[in-house]
Image (cartoon, rainbow, N blue to C red; front, side, top):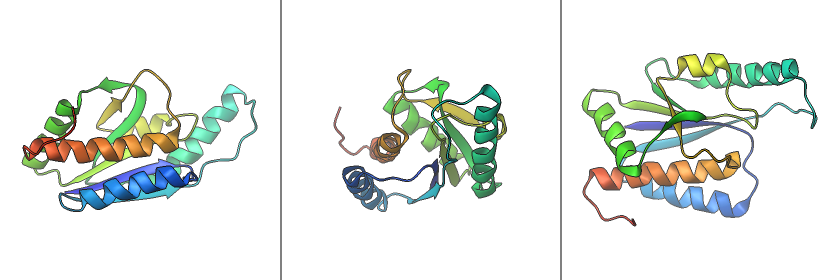
Length: 159
């Protein structure tokens, strides 16, 4: 399996980098995982609806340029479907079973994802109705993908 995480915005916090590095190292036993970090659009604190759409569209174009045409795309979006860790594990297992060896997760910028990115996505996944910092979401996603592989292999994991 090749798992790609496309994310908007730079990761600054050292403790998050360390956590992500640890789970990336653990993941190497199960699948190839890479993170593609794209720059976010600089924006003032207050934006009009039109300016927000323009920013999401620019970030969306950068995201879509990095998506492999063969990839099964899972967009992280608050309006997406919530799954348990076991359900995510089942999703990844079924994708592998049916020959989908490239999976791309997308984490948008602070304004979310463009309509074009959401159209390209094969599914939308929500981790919570709460809003999380995008940098923290990276760590949570990498940990959950790692957990999914442990579940699928019948290996112990923390409940």
